[in-house]
Image (cartoon, rainbow, N blue to C red; front, side, top):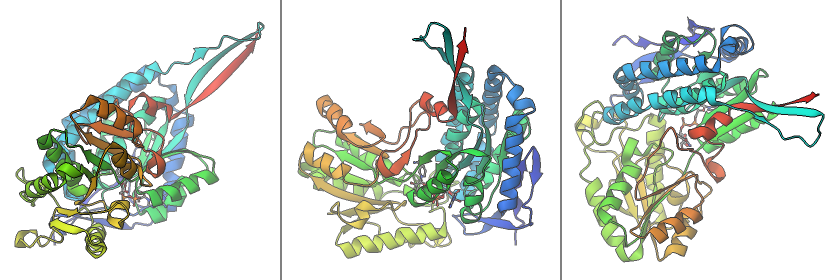
Length: 484
Ligand code: NAD
């Protein structure tokens, strides 16, 4: 058996195994082989990490730093991530099976969040209030909330961590990170850079382990002020409930069933490419996956045929290789969940245009692959159109006109994102206005940026990440009155 790479947590600047010495083994989704292990933390580890973050928030070097100095640390951290982007990307690929080409691009973009929020750290300005009482002088200032617990999922561990960590630190909070039990390795490797950047001990801590074992310990902990969570909506509801017991602040970035809408006046070449990358990037394991392709009836068969033909050429394989276009599913239970949804779609009467199972190629047999799968003649009432599959499964639904497209698109419990493909600017504005989603893309899909607020309507979440809005999620306002 090959020796496992061992990653450790960081608490108060020290590397830590779990208090009771237990480990979780990480498997490579392409080979199914165990390759690394991370501490299996429990309540004792959560308590220790939160206590360290609380000490760092209330005393010592961190609160004594100026906002400008905080900003410089963040920008230095961004530079270190850029330096180590390839190394971190390779760790994440081994852990979650995403394509190295895609991960490399993501890792090279992640530093921008640290540079952007590093720049914002000393621009958190309060105001002087024009008082209605002449004897009074009053002003506001914005102060950090305190200890933040950042909980991340397995699909994009470092990107989704950056969205929380950079604004939280810029605001002056301290942080305890809990990555997914399936993909903790890149986070633990990344945290070593925080020390190198010069952050004081205790400002950023990690505790790895199962959500079910650690969840309540972290989200109900009395010294935690805020929980910033990305994951499924059922888990999000549990996190929200636990945080509510202690009246904690939350940001929740949850799931989606996003509509990608193609009108007959669109550039269909672009729309077909956008539909494919919208659903098959990261093997469909993105919260913003355009899993419902709504196509105007007049071009329905043409678009469905072209999407299926194009997706049929996708090369499945080793995510480390540059020619691979579709990698494995990150976890075995998720692979089985995706396959079970394919059965559901078939039983519901959807027409399978492509894929529909595990690939037959022997070199893919050990990996947790699902073929790119496309169903046509889906109605929006079918489970395949209503529930988040989180895999490479596209449902194509016909519509008649704008009003019909809006009706179908908004008929979902989710509201994370939506895409519109059209040659008409009138239609673009009209659709952007009517779609109930936190992000609407017109003639593009999947674009994100450090400066663009991101978050969900309806069951897709609460609060916003990225952009100037996100830093406010980690601040509270103090009003100071002075009797002159
Ligand atoms: P998940 O909800 O199963 O787990 C997310 C995290 O929560 C993990 O770290 C897990 O250990 C932890 N957790 C589990 N139970 C917990 C509890 N009771 N208390 C506290 N923490 C707990 O999600 P996942 O399967 O890892 O990720 C996939 C989901 O994430 C999908 O639904 C996807 O749409 C969503 N997602 C959303 C966004 C977004 O920005 N909106 C981005 C990526 C993924």
